[in-house]
Image (cartoon, rainbow, N blue to C red; front, side, top):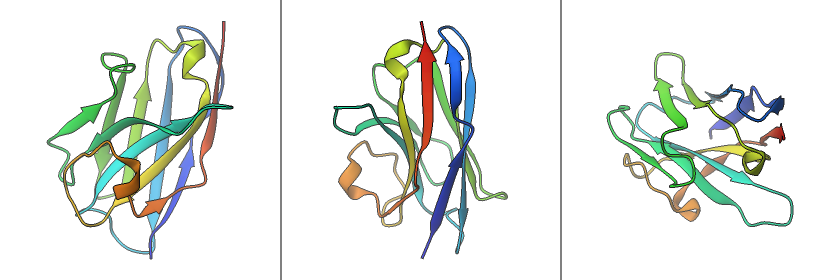
Length: 125
């Protein structure tokens, strides 16, 4: 079993940056693809970014391309989401997820097996 714990969320102003972290415990996730998803109030969960098991391949939602960067440190069992040029529409709860069966960075939420509890990101205008 894998436990994922996100941190780094907060209240920021438009244009600011944040770095989210997701630490995995229970077992190593170095062979798992990892993803970030978000859910805003009244909206469905949406894909944000994903990274392959070795970190060499990434996948981003169009809405965050050029602003967000996903990375991982397998030695620390940790995945990061660097968010720059934040916009009010980025306000959401951000969730980390692990895909244990496939090492590719996929965008479909239903392929991910483990999920964290989420961290709130609020961007004021």
